[in-house]
Amino acid sequence: MLLIKTLPYLKMRLKVEGLDYKLTETFVKFCLDRLPANPNHIEIVGQEKLVNGKSGLCIDIDEDNFLILISKESKTLSQIYISIAHELVHVKQFMYDNLGTLLDQGYEYDTCWWEQEARERSERFLLEFVKYFKLKG
Image (cartoon, rainbow, N blue to C red; front, side, top):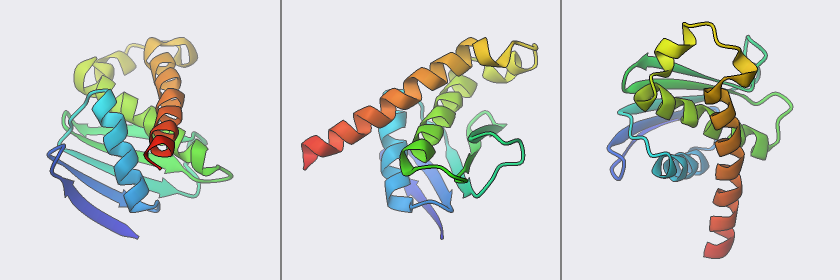
């Protein structure tokens, strides 16, 4: 199912395909509030498998518009949303930390600061999200 909606509290258009819209919308808002980042448009597409074998991919269409591809192949719901959070950290990095330029400079992928930050923050965001909703009842 494909839904496009403008999130008034973020002034951002969110398009979701192949994932639960309401859960994804709530999780994206939760993550972006904590990064903080406020892009104009994000499209998130859940696919059975990504070509590169990765869990996710963030593509900067331009400085304020992003496409996030997420692999659903053999993934739990938690793993899918950790991947979304990971890619949202990259959105913040593209917008405010000059990630686009850094990617062209040949850094070692596994040890570069932007991957370390995305890995650390994505798991924490999911744990905080679950805790937040347990407290809400």
